[in-house]
Length: 259
Image 1 (cartoon, rainbow, N blue to C red):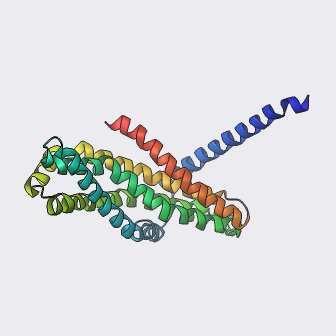
Image 2: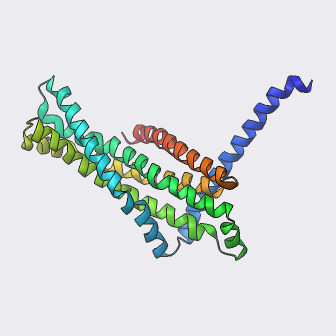
């Protein structure tokens, strides 16, 4: 009889494990947000994390944004040219970047560059028992390790997204106007006429929530990483993959709400 019920037992164990992990993840983010409201940490810790998450991500953000805008300008031109609407190229590039590509791509770039490093940093502190030592000395690890990263990510991501949008728009202008001959006045005039505050607000809300997701998953996976170098490397990989998937899923739900 034991052999008959083995698959059911294994399925139950897997289900219980995932439900337990989901509950722990929910507790982690709720306690992190509570600590942000109660004891956000010293400003110098927050500024240090903003430098790490934001400033050190500038190069990859600018590079990605420039070529994303250039690709949008190139593809958009040949699509609009079929309908004789090349003057709408600025609108197409701006709305694509501000509403969708800017928040999502900037978040994915920060996930790969900073999110993985956050997980590895906290994971190494966990396996080297530095976090246990802090708890032994009655120092709350959340105050010194977790909340500064949350606050820095929530501030840095909207700023990086705004930079991504601006650079991407000028990348589209470079290809559309300078390379393909679109009227520069039409490029910016149609963009100004079509882009509304609701579009900008949508991008800000998305990038702000993506910052929370990056800090949440990165810190959680590092805080509960396994033992040894293998545990940290597995936690880092899981952090990048899970964060990227959640960002794309959450983007869909936010888009359906904010449209």
